[in-house]
Image (tube, rainbow over all chains, first blue to last red; front, top):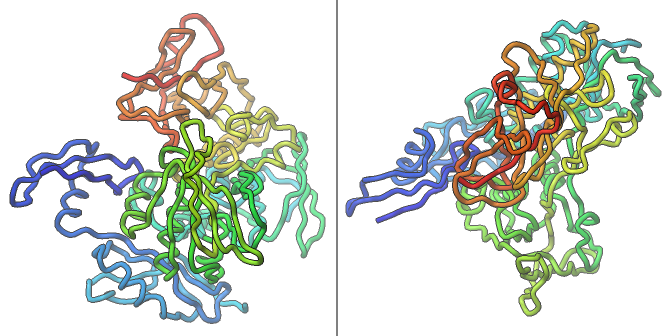
Amino acid sequence: MEKKFICIRCPQGCEITTTLDGLGAITDITGNSCKLGIDYVKSELSDPRRTITTTVAVTGGELPLCPVWSEKPIPKDRVMEAAAVIRPITVAAPVDINQVICENILGTGINIISSRAITKGGQ
Amino acid sequence: MKKIYDVVVIGAGPAGLSAAIEAKKSGAGDVLIIERNNEPGGILLQCIHNGFGSVIFKKDLPGPAYAWNFIEQARSLNVEMVFDTMVVDITGGRKIYASNSVEGFIELDAKAIVLAMGCRERTRAQIMAPGDRPAGVFTAGMVQRLVNIEGYMPGKNFVILGSGDIGMIMARRLTLEGAKVIKIIELLPYLTGLRRNYVQCLQDFGIPLELSTTIKRITGKKRVEAVETVGVDETLTPIAGTERVIACDSLILSVGLVPENELSRKAGVVLDPLTLGPVVDETMATNVPGIFAAGNVVTIYDLVDYVSMAGATAGISAAKFAAGAPVSPPAFTLTPGDGVRTVMPQKITGLSGPDASVLVELRASREFAGRVSVNILEDENIVYSHVEKYARPAEMITLKINWNETAKKLSNNKSGLKVNIAKI
């Protein structure tokens, strides 16, 4: 069986064609330009993951929101679930960059951290 | 603020920050960045998605985290930054006029200037979308700012016109925040953004993409109530009978970016009618001595990493000029040949140091499905060639050329060189 992928590991977006045997094992990969493409296809077949990026509300900060992200990719089918967990979170300013905002999201062992600092300030 | 600076940078986005940092590192004493926003970082601050830094940091960072590296470096190098300040005029003699609410009218002299004002979004007026004039029509970047920085959700049911990266990224973002993105429509027969965004922003969330389709009419009294779409043929002419009415409360336009060069024009900087940015050489020098430019103000990039790299080059060149280094006039011109829409730099001095490394950024004018060679030609003679797996207008091609090697192959002593893309 043949399966096609567009690699998302870098901006090049290689079109990768994979041949699978009856048991779903990879017998051939073509179209990738580097090792990342092979890694991507393998993970898409066994455990597809995505980095989630969103925002949380900030109280007492110069800005009302702080951008956050999962420090590692989380399972793709749990992204919407993670968004729902993160949405009601509120943090107090000051927020540091890389501050843990939500520990061990959905029991994945992965933390949600801030991607910038927010200083204290009146709004 | 002082009255005279070695280097003044206009804009504290990725190009400007990088320019200021490298100008300092190259020995410029007083370096000032003038920024109209209230903090540094530019558009990266609202680009909270990941995907930045793959070239420079070999990491996959969100926009604000990417910017953070440069903001911290600029601060530690004592780059002076002034915020909430608008530059209103620049002269060819490198006088800068600006204003803010604290100091009022400001007049400065710069030994060298780096233009790093970035770009602006194309709006409804520029694509002439017919119909009513209700609330609920936004540019993609505006929605990005509202949702990611200011904390407002501007609608419930969205249609997006244009398959550019910001539109696709906002489709995912709005979905994550609980809004409905009905579909993305694209006038051209191909995706205009990166394919990885098609996968991770549209496919992952089941958002449909309709190619060769445009907006025929926007309807709504106070707020958008519906948009009427229509299919187009190869000549982009609407096909009668393919109209469809989609009920929605918001229309997002992701229909391209235009370099912001009002100040450049005032300073007498010559613009390229294709890129709509300054004509520059590989040192990022414009035609006006001592005025340099970098980033999206010069040409629209796909990747911020290359914007930072161009900013660094401009900063180094500006520091050299401020220190009184002689100016090397460009010896060659580069113009788009067959298959190429834009090329930058448009001029080459060929004199930038022993490694003479020249970065050329270009875009294809049409889709090439198979392998292509990207060539630099002196008449019919190929003096440089590089193979790509394909070429698409949506994806910028970066050539890293060792100019010393290339110059050896120049035989006819011609100054006019062409860049083309040819099928292999």
